[in-house]
Length: 554
Image (cartoon, rainbow, N blue to C red; front, side, top):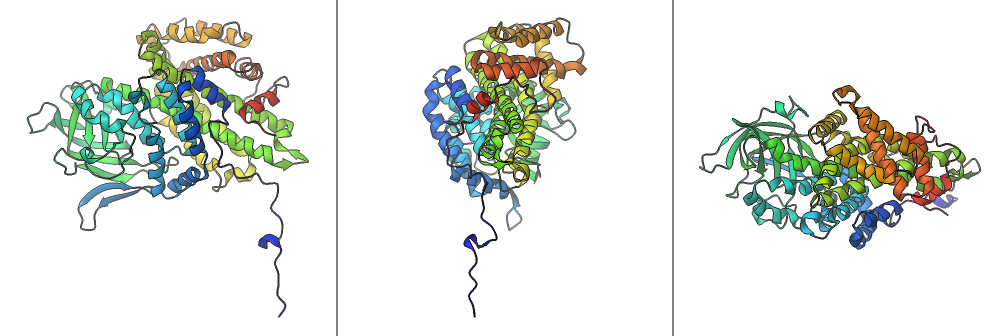
């Protein structure tokens, strides 16, 4: 019998004109914009950590962990085999490796561990890198980071828990916190009847029979509990004095399980590696945080810090999507030339790069505001306003940027083997969590009304670029005119916030980016020279310089 020898590759053709897999590269070292911002905003001393984490975030191992963690989603084990309540969320080992990576680099705690100036900036850069490895783990990382300033409203409670939250040892064991080498925190605020309107919350709290004025029993539900596997969650419940903040540990002081009843895990569009749950409190033991009736005021510092992370996460998702598009276009040929050399594709890629750079510099400048706020009241005022503006705008831009980046890869971008489908599902979540767009805009109007120093502090920062670009100067004058009258019409809030956001982004680019980047951004975003879609830069735009800065190619 004649042996049939198949051709090389056991196929009908040779695979060619496909880009090499983008892995085992340093995410930080290939990001000139982030590296510049790290140094400029006062975090240069953290460069070695950024380089090290950048190498890990772009490694084949970490990218495979991310793929596995998203494919093998968390499972709820509500009961053991004998019928006893267990209420444990079980994760794939890859999730734990990703969590260990973030905790090892103190992405969950660096500003609280480090007294050196610029710690928030360094931590922001590390979070930006970790998000590009896997976005889902950055939810519990952010919650843990943000819980610390809220816990400090109750000093004795902070003294007990803060050392556990600041540990750089990740300990996933489901056991009492006192026996662990490190702890993670979550948050449970939203209820089904109220959503963002926390004043509609109906969960109640009554004093425990222990006789302690700080121990309570909670009854009610939470429609969204973020990171339910955490060692503790911060939550809100109603006392006779009003909404009050509480810490609900998963285990009681005597070492037995608390009544933390996980009803089901949410089947989410994205962020699938991370668990979100519906939970019930049924005489659930809790420790009060802050005074009775001041729960919203107590938990606001946590939300303020998680909004910073929402902006960082959205900016990081944008950056990774743009990198995927640039890498593909540099290695893919069509119609006789590389995609990156095709004029229309160059226009699209350059426009994507502008959006990504503007988001990165805005988020990193915001992080510096958190550092400055510790020693400067005006900086704190700026940070409070700029956090909401930055969170709103970057999160709004992320889905558009990721969708356009996906299109640059054609059909390949829509296939689950690649990274872009996961980024596309992740892109909207940061705009929803920590306050939807409308909630954020209304918060901004309230901040402007209640803090007369907020707008002057914001414009002092923006006006540092005065005279650097005619479009920006004209835009600042227009915003001033818009804000000259009382902001008593909420229907126009989005237009106001958009104008403020673009002013901050443009001012940062005018001051710190090369002229081709700043000029193209201002001309299109402020000067009316761009269209309504990405890829509509004017002929005068130096797309070559923009692309070389974003992702140098041969």
